[in-house]
Image (cartoon, rainbow, N blue to C red; front, side):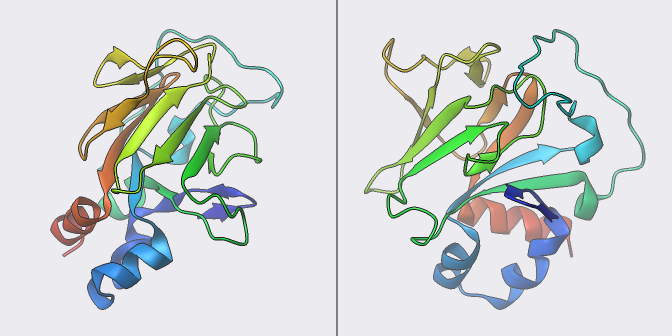
Length: 181
C-alpha cells in the first residue's frame, strides 16, 4: 500500500518480485534493506495533528488471525536519484518530507536518520526525538551526543513506541519465501 509519500507496503506485495527477480534487480527495484512492522496499519496510533508528537507509554494491541501477506507492513529503505542525489542518507519520521514515513503519533516529525556506508552497512542516529529510538532495547544516541548505532539483520528497532524489525535484502527475501509459499 502506498499513500502519497507514505511508503509502506504489505509483505504479500513483494512475493512476485522475490520469486522472479535476481537479487541485484530486486535490490535496485525495492531496496537493499527494510523495516518490517508486524501488524496492520491500524495498530499504529495515527497522529491527528501532524505538528505534534504525543508521549505514550502503553501500546495498544488488538489481535486477530495471523495473515502474513497482510500483517507485515514493509517500509523499504530505498530512494531514487530523482528523489535525492544523496542516496545514502534516509530520513525517518512522521511527516511526508522523510524518506521513511511512520504514521504514528509517538514518532517525531523528523525522528531519526539512517546512513548506508560504502560497504553496505546501515547506521542509525536519533534526532533528539521526544520518545527516543531504541535498537534491541538499548537507546540510540541523539545526534551530537554519541555515535550512530550499527544495524544488523534481525535487530528490533523502536521509533517511539512503533516497533520494527530491520532486515537486509537477503534475509527479507528469505522471510518472503518462508511465509508466502
